[in-house]
Length: 365
Image (cartoon, rainbow, N blue to C red; front, side, top):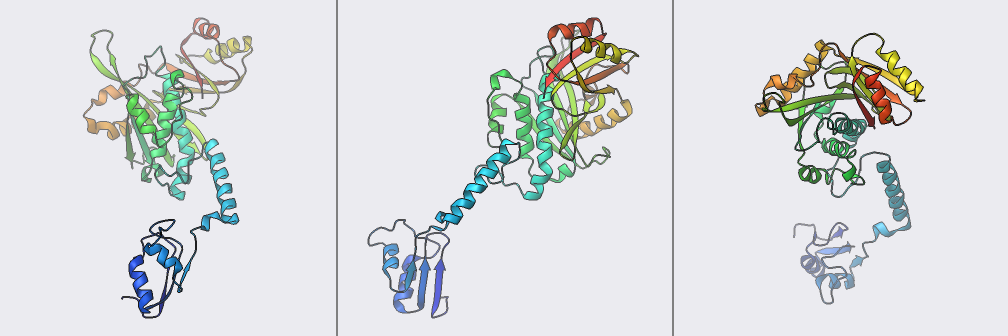
């Protein structure tokens, strides 16, 4: 016996933690003065078992394992379940999921705003780059690159799940599909979506404390030579407090909030374009909530390209292909407009015909 003579032992952990047969012998011999037990190897104890003998022993206090069944405990559990359900419905991460990885509170606080950002980036890619006019999203490969404080987090699975959710949500066939951190990998495999997560310690993206870059590559065929190659599209974003902000869309440096109905117009960077677009929308009774103009900022984007190249170069791909992110010139620009209603097709046609717009995307985020 390793315990002192006259000791008393308590087991309120799990049945089998204490050898019930040895406990009975120690009590019978008088080496142990007593025991208190509320867990047993078999519950309820079988007749004639060591557990049943312990319950009937004069020097044993035995109670049911009912700590969680008190009125106070049931009330606390009910409140906690309701609070977590409301938090998840509002877009927060689960704190106590039984089939999901544990997320520490400090990591949870840092991840929360970026979960929303990455979902918006995925939806933005599907609606703007992978629409019917640009080719369907299939067998695409995505490099999700974290920089700054995010790069130091060990558990980014919620961001992976948010990307898959964002990519799939605009597709009608996926309406109602509940994508979460438990089933995201399975859904990605079923849809032939490959996501490579990269953690970069490069600080050249300042002044952002954290930056997320989505580099999407999909196979395409050259219309001239018929050669197979990969087409790249890059979206970058950060968070200001809890507010997601997109600061790169393709080859364009920008800054806009990815929310509501957005009208993205690609046009030649020449005087008068903003006025013409505003006049056409005003004529149709469409109100502009805010507008962002996004010219190509070559100096800034070349730096970002080098960061992306550095993160994905291990797969042996040609860096020059990445530079051709979108076939734009220094004379191209984007107008990102937040509008108060869905823009109809005849308005899009007027923007192209009268406004001199090269291309139009209508997004709902």
